[in-house]
Image (cartoon, rainbow, N blue to C red):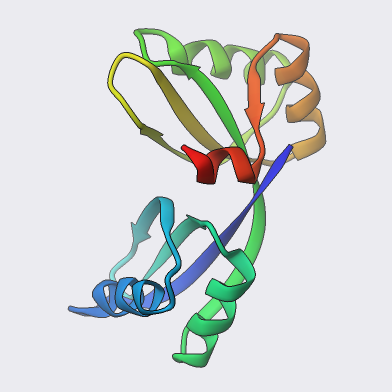
Length: 143
């Protein structure tokens, strides 16, 4: 039920994101979803890729600081209120969203919401109880 995500700490300078994308491309690693958050000095690039351990290895070999965490991928209809329904379930369970990002493969079909919660097990149980579809890493990479 959990999806492995890598986080790369970036210097906030021109071309750094392009370098990382190039390293992954050169090693035939496909990016399925990403998020970038930044401050004045550094950024955090969060990636879901098809070859997590390989990505982590090649990025470290290229001087990157890389971590691996688990996130939850929730599939919802791509319509008004899709996110709201998930957040109501999370609020009712008393959980906190640490961060999230989302993507849509084809407009009007399903969206995939990627979440990191303060209590992942409780979040999974609450989402399943309310009949939300939770995707595996393989399912996310197959989209």
